[in-house]
Length: 155
Image 1: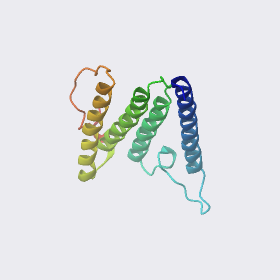
Image 2: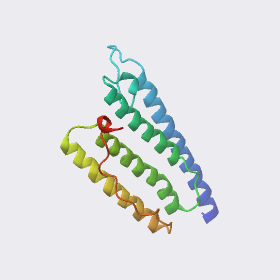
Image 3: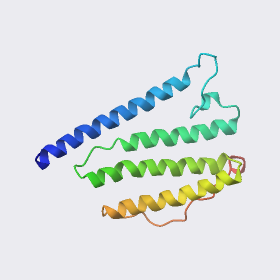
């Protein structure tokens, strides 16, 4: 199979995978917003069903992170498999960082908070390694945001 045909085939497969993945996430989100047969609701990433304003803020933060991730992962294939991998994985890793920061803002369990801090650091390192591997420049250095103000400490 020639390189051109492989590239075209790869783009078609990648496009199909992206579309079906987004459709699956949308279907799952719709299903979560509908009541279960017993009348209960699944509140994953849905601030509409949160029991407190802090939980609602947390769910809104994580929901926004997931929406950004799905949008950013829908990058148009470049024809370079390695670059395409990084274009899809970097937003996935950034979403993990964003969700970990949400836990630091809203969470209370110190073990989970420490895990969130580790996630932030390791995911940032992996994003940097992927970008360097494909020859992309790194953004300017800045301190790792492993500690953020909790929602009750915000101005």
